[in-house]
Structure formats: structure tokens, C-alpha cells
Amino acid sequence: MRPIQGDDPHALAIVRLGVDVPYEQAWSLQRWVHGKRAAGELTDTVLILEHAPVYTAGKRTAPHERPSDGTPVVDVDRGGRLTWHGPGQLVAYPIVAITDVVAYACRLEETMIQVCADFGVTARRVPGRAGVWAAGDPVIGLPDRQLGAVGLRVARGVTMHGFALNCANDPRWFNRITPCGIPGVGVSSLSAETGRRIVVEEVMPIAEKRLAEALGKQPFDLHEEDLLRR
Image (tube, rainbow, N blue to C red; front, side):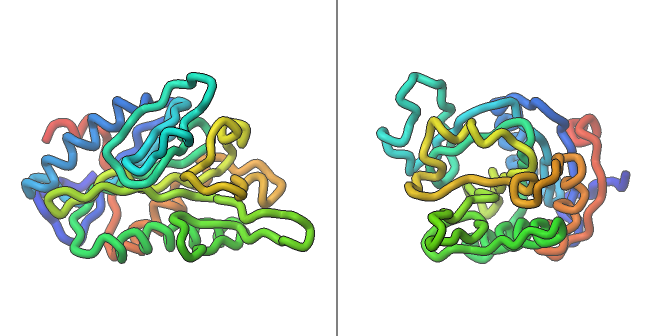
């Protein structure tokens, strides 16, 4: 572990929170880190984890997009619409200082595109849609399939929330909703696209490396306990 000396513009602290993390717990930690980062007391930091199963609704979620069976939904302060997080999905919450939110969102998408390529999966951006996608084939009735989603909040020049990349999650969790409010598309994962099980633990070090590259930072590991001592 290297020490955190306030706002180091070249460093990115990698904090792994583990698996089955309750959404509200991670959200509370994000807000705490955000306050420290905005005050210049922490360097850029990313929280990496797998959530316990949860549906979250961004600010643009329409009433008809919510589950019709009464499934609980957590309303959050990010952009975007309704999505799911849970086991088998890698979630990254970079809490970093930025000046251009559009360019930053593109960097997160590029991170996921590069990670997908590292596992032999071709992912791309689709104009008018956030996230990254596997291309469909209308000739055989195969829709575009979302592999990863992006949802952001920026306050005081510092980001919250981030991206989620489907690795080995059960796609049936998405059957109750219209993911990200986009009808007529599918949801896939690295495992489904490659035909072999690719778990978050395998993807995590690659994602950390690609994210640091996209942000132009030098990553270092930081334990959660050491983070909370700040």
C-alpha cells in the first residue's frame, strides 16, 4: 500500500469491497469518499465490487419502466434509468475529479470495450445509447445486446456512480424491467458471448488496469480499512 497524500493527480486508489455488498452500504461509502475527494483530502479512488441483487432507478426513470409486480427499487441520484446490479456483475464506482463529463463517460465505455476485447468479445458504442453493446443481426432476428451500462453523477467537479459490466450474471434478473429504458434490445454477458463461464474475479484485475489506462492514472491497491482511516 502506498500512502495517500491528499490530491495526488497521478494516482488512482483501487478499493475492492468484495461480494454481496448491499447497495445502500456502497452508496453511503461513495458519498463519504466523494466528500473527501472534493475537499482534496483523498486522491482519485475507485470502489470495485459485486452487489447483492438490487434494482436501482436513476433520475430519468419513467413510472412504466418500474417492475409491475411490486419488486422493490432503490431510487438513486445518478443519471439514467432503471437497471439491475447483483452477483456475477462487476461494478466500478470511480470517484474522480473531472472537467468534461461527456469525455469521462466515453472513457468508461472505452474501458469496458477494452475489457471485452481482452476476453475475445467485440463490444461497441451505439449512437443515442449509453453503455456498450454486442451487435445484433436483424437478418436472423438477433437484437443488439447490452454488455455494460454507465450511470453518473457529478458534483463539485467530482464523479459518483460509474459502470457495470456483465460477466456471469443470470440474465433473468432483467426480465422484469426494460433495462436502461431501451425497448427491443437484449442483455448479455461475457460468459454468454464466449460460451464459457467468466467470473468477476477473473475480470476484475483486467478492468482495474484498463480503467487506470483510460483515466491516465497510476493504480495502487488500498484496503477499505485504510481508506476509512482518512
